[in-house]
Length: 244
Image 1 (cartoon, rainbow, N blue to C red):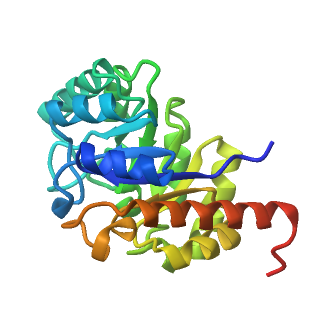
Image 2 (spheres, helix red, strand yellow; image 1 turned 180 degrees about the vertical axis):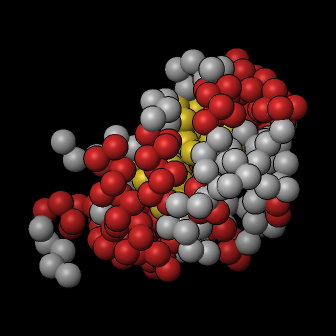
């Protein structure tokens, strides 16, 4: 059965989340501090967002932006934050941890996943600074609870990494882990991403905001247009009308 396309949109507060849902987003990635690449949002924000939208809310679990290598104290904090997100009604979490050598920190991940208990799990773009994209995907697949990885294919933006993303998508299919493309995705690149990589989950941030800036709110009409591009590309890919 063909996997249905999913548009995930980054939100930093309840107004963002409502605008994303209004535009037709399928899922929210809830974060704070986008200037630092996204950190764990506050309890108050999580509670507000979960109560004000009906689409799934995945909460970022990231205690600092210094690196993706975490101390024992960091891991205790992250594990507690997973529990809090779950208790507040989040649908899932977005988390990732690496060793000093750039491999998946399986112990840190297992600690966080021990509190996930039924939550969906996305491994975030720590993957893009890991020592091996394919090695990381293999390691993630051994954890069992991780549904997907968010990646730009190891490049600064996803549209720069079409070949890498296609290869990761095919490997992910074999391993049972969905590959979601994100970073630098704009409205006019969605069709190419889907057609050239086969990926059906797209992650957008500044690309659906007024002025293309995280300093501005989400534009519901841009979300709607992004969803239309995604659905159109998915349909043409699957019905054979895309001959490129």
